[in-house]
Every structure is written in C-alpha cells, then in structure tokens.
Image (cartoon, rainbow, N blue to C red; front, top):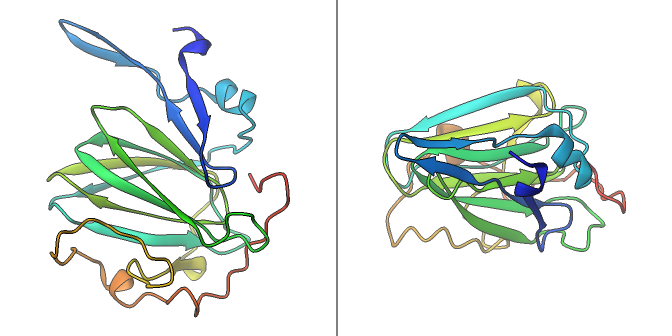
Length: 196
C-alpha cells in the first residue's frame, strides 16, 4: 500500500482530523492498513500512541460520553469502528481555542473505515446505531481513575443532537451523573498551534 492512499483531512474543530484509509477488497474479503505512524506525523499529528482500548456495545442507542482525562493524564485518541456503526462526537474544551465549546459529529462504521483523531483537550463520546458494535481507539497516555471526567451528553449549552428519535439512551452510572458543561472547570488551554 502506498502512503499516498491515506487521506488526512482537517475538520472544522481546530486540530481535529478525519482519516480515510482505503479498503482493498477482493473475493476473499478485504485488506486495510488503518494505522501508519509516519502518515500521521506528516499531517502534524505528533501523538505517540500508548495503548489500544476496545468497547463492545450490545444495544442500539448505547451512549458513551462525553469523556476526558484531566492533566497530566489527558489523552489524544484515534477512534475507529471494527463492527457496527456509531455517531461519534467531539467537543473542543480548550479555553482560548477559536472553536471552544463547539462540537462535531461523524458517522464511523466498519463499512466506511473512517477514523477520527481527537486531540488532547477535547471531550469525546459516541452513540451506537447498530447492535453488537465494537469501537477501537488508540490513546497516547495512561488511564487515571482520579482524572476521569464525564460531562453531560445532553447538556443544553452544548446543544448536541444525538438523533435518538425520542428514545432514552443506554447509559453507565457515571454518564447518568455527569457534570454539566458549566460545572466543568476545564483545565485545558489552547496553545495556538494545537495541543497534540
């Protein structure tokens, strides 16, 4: 596979990226290279990924988020779907960023092979659109239980339309008792050239 087959596209939220890596299909199935460190670096993504995390969600409308890790355990993420389909959501939580408090949504699926790069200082979450959905995400820092934060997925100030069609999402206890956006005293600051 040639490196030029990757497309790393800027997104309206400062420093976030959408990554397209093609699937090479034949009568056996397909082959893909979803991660290439050098291609990410050539696009200005300097994250050194530390660990892979994987989640399985049995039910449609399982909502995970909005999550972040506080400094010094903040994490950049590279998110993709191995099975099923999600609506993936990012929120820029970096004070001083031109896109502070704004959000962005993308559909990620096993079929489209798209990935989203979530910089440090962003909130992240997703809602499943198919049963038995598996999400894989790389992170560039260790998990800290004391630094784990959840911000309310339905906070009116963020105004995210999760397209639940009047149905209640499947939530964890942590996400049912999450902080509001105004209660969250964000420690993240925009550095001007990104915080990756």
